[in-house]
Image 1: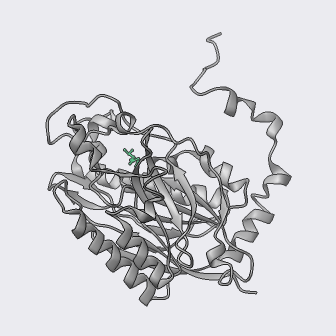
Image 2: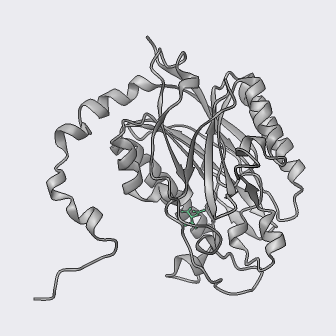
Length: 338
Ligand code: CDV
């Protein structure tokens, strides 16, 4: 049975600090409608899609900060019922499109940078992932409003749900009677081989990853502080593509990766680069603008087999007895100077 599915990266352009929530929601609904018109069965949206990428700002006012989060407690129910965002999930369900989307999650006990995967058939949350690798600092670099800070360590707790793959049962028929195996990552996680390999070990066929990657943040990166904006943009795009293509290849899986792009508040540029990458590491479709854009491709899950059964047959070629250091040590321990 063929295992072909039409999928999309739903790129979302600039969202400013003052952009009304309703405007963002209308844009997201339009993207889901475009996806359905093109026969797309799974659309992946960016990280913290419903708001601007607020961790770049130092926000001491808790009343403002709380507006960037969705409350998800036993009384509010899942994100799909949240008053600010329900219309998006309802439309995806009406149209039968599976969606992955990122948001700031407030459980009442902790705040996380989260993404859910929601079935287009039933509207159920099939899986939830909380970002593990939080970049940046707890304290702002400075309070100059033109500085791009990266305060994820201040606003979020590190993800505590692990790297758990799941079966997208909603896509079972399209995938020839065997539900696709899906993994989730958020932005900075895509730079870390550890998460990808945890998913590779579960046989993941489709990795879904939304991101907000700044195109100019020398205070975050360190190094040459006089780097030009053009060079910084080029480097950010290069590293984004490098890690996604390499990790999709070494784990024999497709990756759908979706950007929040454009220039937020006319000050803070984010790279586009939304892509669908195949298990050999090739880009099969990518965005051509910095604005809202649907990047579509039909993928054949059987293309994962060559890598999974040969070059990256993990069961056959891995030598776990050699990898102890990977889980015993967090930081770097160089060998002693002789
Ligand atoms: N949102 C992110 O996680 N951004 C990081 C930047 C700050 C390095 C990224 O990896 O793209």
